[in-house]
Length: 289
Image 1: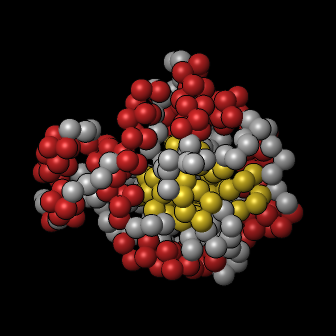
Image 2 (image 1 turned 90 degrees about the vertical axis):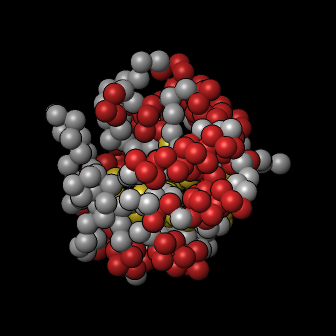
């Protein structure tokens, strides 16, 4: 039996709530190859061997590097759901400019098909926002780009569609065009702007993929998290992941690492039971300043 809890969407996609984010498998600043490609391959295989069935990647990581490592490690992907993203590319300076015209999106889908070595992409997220910090939502219609992906889904190039860095209005707009299986946004114990969105998605049977579990903390908030971790004898990352898994049944997480030892520490967070006093401290953390 798989040691990890799963979440099944209304579209029939079942994900382990503990996933793996492959972003760190590229080189520094998510550019170029990793220092140790062999270890990168071992990390992916170790995650799947441990029971993870949900790997998050993007062809613009590297670019192409992460997808190629995922292919080397996991193809033909038996029982593994590979979730990729489109909507951005990399420029010559390592930037992440938007690329969301129908023509640009088709080129990105085709590139993902090649680099992952598949005929159909399992899940494709449209990356929408970014903002000044690279992680925040930006209001505006997404009908044209999401409609272009929906058309490619109808062609059989994509099985499932998702969204990344979006607000509630954009989710509703997308769902009026085609089914959405997952929404991937920045959410953690210190950054909780999506509480209502998570609850509404749970009612709809849509997974919410929380990224950056330690992002955006103030020093005082970090101190509270660190104190809980010390008391429990674990790393702060493990506490942050365990809190997310406790928070709502449709939340899935995608912590990433380039080392097998660190991976095992992250995966152990799925087994971490947070006592009532620790949960109370963590739930109150946003009141810190």
